[in-house]
Length: 275
Ligand SMILES: [Zn+2]
Image (cartoon, rainbow, N blue to C red; front, side, top):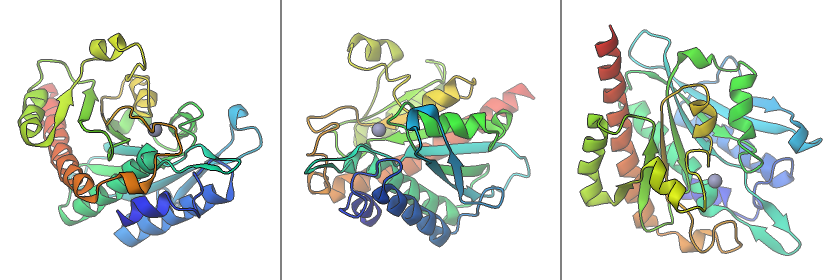
């Protein structure tokens, strides 16, 4: 909650790319990655990029690496975008749920994994300029900052604190035991699975393309997107910390830690069946 509150504070001022609040935010995330014990990626905690859609503003992804027990150079990438809409006049779009919540959850997951030595190496990426069209995740791949062929899975967290039900969308085949295992968590933790089709039927949003996991999906990388979907304060000034329940959020952190373990098992199984 401390991470969530800091990123949704007046200093962060809605975290719009290229603003002082944005700089405050990526510096804070970098500091936290170091404090948690994550390593820089190829010598740096940040990746800077420009893009026509950003005009003269510079995008900044924040990266933190955790070495896995396996000697392979395969990578799981956990993403959560930290940018949001900033302020307009006297209105500030705090983005407490969208997506200070996902970044805070990523910090919690990193802290958990540091103490439980994961099998695969993990790269945590707080992505920038997602709101402008998934630019940060797209640039992460396009710039060869990561070798996409080494990426075995993407877990993307976006808007995970607020909505009544937490849901997921995954590229794993429907009959995969993975879904069955998630369902067992579902009973207690209100995760509901929604298929691509039912997402499309809402005609509001195509969740397959709605956040950074799509940048990975386009390159054939399997993903698990965890989100809460839209709520009354989506992209509004009411998306603030006061409307987030710390108990609710803390329960969800536990759920996501469990989901991570399932993803790991699922990849191990998949790789064993290939070889
Ligand atoms: Zn978002």
